[in-house]
Length: 359
Image (tube, rainbow, N blue to C red; front, top):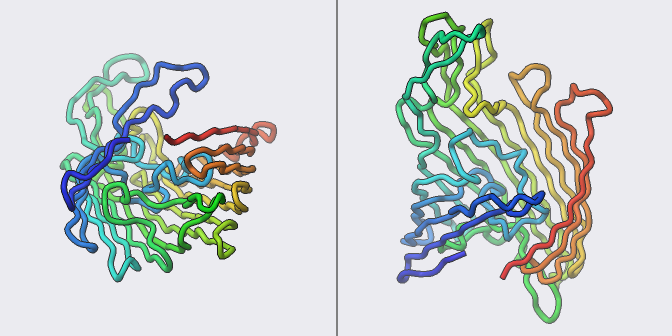
C-alpha cells in the first residue's frame, strides 16, 4: 500500500496484490497492480478520481479488503462480464461526493469495460474442416465506454469520505481504546447501483459451411443491485456490536433464449449466466470475540436445466485480537452448485482457518 497527499486537495492511492501466493503449494502467481488512482477534492459534493478504480457497483463491491467481516468477498454475487475488469477494478474516471452533510452519497464512473477485437480468425467445423471465420471478440463493436453508478442514503454516519484512502466503502469498523476493542459510529446505509455497457451480449447464428459466422442478435449488458449495511454498537462503550449486510443483484449476460442452431458467444469459453444473486452476512461481537454467519445464492436464467445455480451457507467464530490489524477466523460451511446434480453430489463441505495481519 502506498498512499499520500501531493498537495492540499490532491491525494493518491496505489496497491499491489498477490492474494493466492503459496496456495496449495503454488508459488508461481505474480504480483500485480490492483489499485492506482489520484483524487482531486474540489468540494464535499465533488471529488474526481482517475486511474485504476474499484467499480462503484453495490457497497460490497467498493469495500476495501481490510474492512471485510467474513473471510473474503462474496465473489458468487459479483459477476462482471469477462474481460471487463481485474479483481473488480477498471480504468477510467469517477465523480463522487457527499450531499446534505453526508446523508446522500453518489458515485458515477466512466471506464473502459470490454474492448472488442475485430481480428478475424478461423474456426473448425464438427468434421474438422475450416468452415468459417468470425471475430475473435465481437462485443462492443462501437467501442463505447462502460457506465457504473451508485446512489446511497446514510441514515447515520457516512460510509465513505473525502480523500483517496476514504474512497473505499466502510465495512465493519473496529478500533482499540482503553484496552478494549470498540466499534466506530453507528452506520445504517442503503443504496442502489447500476452497471451498463453497450453490445456485450452476442448470439451466433447457425453455422453455414464455407461462410463467415454471422451474429444473430446482440444485447446490452446490464446489472442492477440494491444493498443494505448496518454496523451498530449495542452498548454505550461500543464493546458489543451487531454488523449485518445484504445485497440483491440482477444480471443480464445474454441476448435471450437460444433458438435452433444458435450459440452464445462465450469469451474465454466461460459462461456468465444471467440471473439473480443474493448474499447476506451477520456478525455479533463482544469485545474481541464474535460469531459470524453468511450465505450466498444465485439462480441462473436462460441456461439448460439449472446449470449455474448456487447455494452456500457458512459461518464460525472470530477472534478480533487487534481488530483488522490482527485477527483469526474459522469458517465452516457447505455449498451446492447445479441443483440437478445427483443427491450425493449436491453438497460439498469446506472449512478454512484464516490469519490476517496488516502492518
